[in-house]
Length: 293
Figure 1 (spheres, helix red, strand yellow):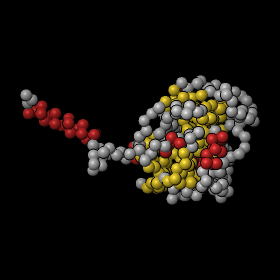
Figure 2: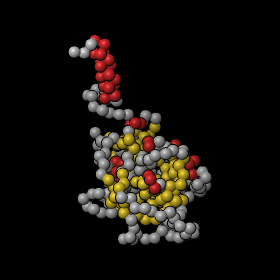
Figure 3: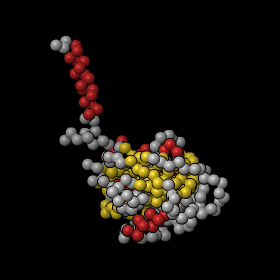
Figure 4: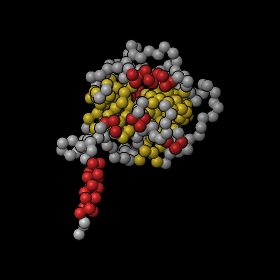
């Protein structure tokens, strides 16, 4: 039989434990964490092939065409919960993101202001590439898409919300690869591999949450969408131009516009993060919230 003083201690421990179990719960007792505390969405990679660092190839060695010899990355299956990602504006109330950011969500939306979320509607999910397009009532200045050839070693600038926080990444183009999403179709999705160079602000750990964010060239034109990372090797993988073209063809609401974002200066490795700050402030790059239940 427990002594009264031990019963009191046991009661305190039970209350302490329950304070963690029931925090962030609604009136029904279901766990509903605040969106700001959700996990960033990031598919895990297994059997990642070793990528060689870019050789001194000169400024204009064009990115090779897709080849059967391109290495393939296998994605590990994971259970999706409430999560965050990134999206960017491509038209009036039209947004692009990574497929895995909104796939499987019972509802989702973009952060449109302080404690404001604009709900996503009419999602178009691409079955062959990790890309998706959706609509919201909130509109923002839109990006334009680059149509020039990419070249090895060129700069890429990634904007979004890694770990749920605003950041910008500078990278260098390595070459082509494929993603095996582990689906029943067993198809391979072409991607581009980039070597990470610099993060602003400087932080360690995963880039999870930047998925769906835009990758732009020095002129601020879209040349990719961040879809997955290989953290140990400092690699970022983005949707290939073929995937972007296919995604835009699938969405009837997308209409190319020349009245979108205008960049007065070219983006450079020295000041790229300032462009990211401006884009997020204008909501052209926005944080995505996904509710699974």
